[in-house]
Amino acid sequence: MAEEERKSATTGGGLEGLAAAARSAGGERKRLPPVHLWNPDFCGDIDMRIAADGTWFYMGTPIGRPALVQLFSTILRKDPERYVLVTPVERVGIKVDDAPFLGVELQRTTNERGQVLRLRTNVEDWVEIDADHPLRFAEGASEGLKPYVLVRGRLEALVKRALLYDLVDWGEVREVDGEDMFGVASAGEFFPMAKAAEVEAWAAQ
Image (cartoon, rainbow, N blue to C red):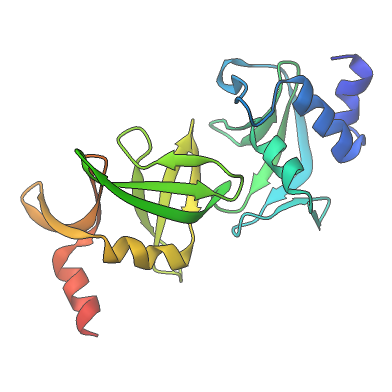
């Protein structure tokens, strides 16, 4: 990438400059670029934020073009200290309020591995919930249990609240480390949600 184009993406070139950098890095939906292999210099933070509902903002304004959001999502990476958009020649920091992706649809099938769940994200990634893409449940400050699915790298999707009820409907009780746990099975794996006794208490309320 020319030096002028590189600067445009981080010092005032706006969304189009950043999009050009993403396209030059191979960030197209046909294949994901190998962002885990790139270690360019950090060029500072840009005014881009991913809200908890999955909306991407640039300079305080929502990015209204889904194709552009999908393009940026292909060069997103979570480093130990921050989320970044990365190309072979630059790395810029962005803010993420919760998880970078939002899980918006669940599909349920059954095969020789038993129940298999697939999640679609707001950037049109499909991921099978399995050992490589585990489901975890975290306690939210006021939202109760919040389910997350690992999409790729260290990037997770927060599963929409409405889909949590599907996960509960598809759940079961299994013994984990000597204790009865309520959780969800998918692709031969079991993902605990809470102690079975706690779930019984919720249901009785």
